[in-house]
Structure formats: structure tokens, C-alpha cells
Length: 83
Image (cartoon, rainbow, N blue to C red; front, side, top):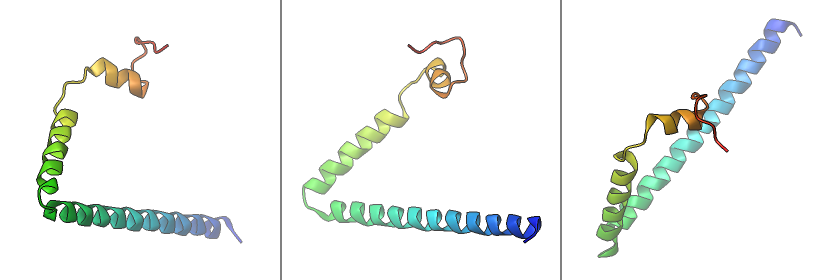
């Protein structure tokens, strides 16, 4: 077996791994959507859960995080030391 055959085999394996990962992620996403659709139909509880989820999303995505925190967590900021 020459080097180009080996390289082609590695690329084929990587493609299959990536495809399996994508298929698994798509399946997980579909199940989460079905789960949320089911929860929305539950009387009383559905609206409460959606309100809590909306509050959590708002608090998560729209809260201020200093750049120094992000840089120190990623290791890009050498001036901040983490003990």
C-alpha cells in the first residue's frame, strides 16, 4: 500500500466519522424539538416552562461579561493569572 492510498483511507475514515457525528447531532436536535413541542402542549406547565426558558436564555445571552474574563478563560490574556 502506498502513501496516497493510506492518505485516501484516512480521509475516508474521517469523512465517515464526521458524517456519523453530524447524523447523531441532527437526531439529538430533532428529539429536543419534539420534546419542546410536547412540553408546549401540556396545559399550564408548558407556558411556565417556556417563560422560565426565555428568562434563562435572556440572562445567559444578554448579560455583560468583561473581555478580560473571556480572554483569561481561553488563555489568550497573559496579564490575568488564575490561581
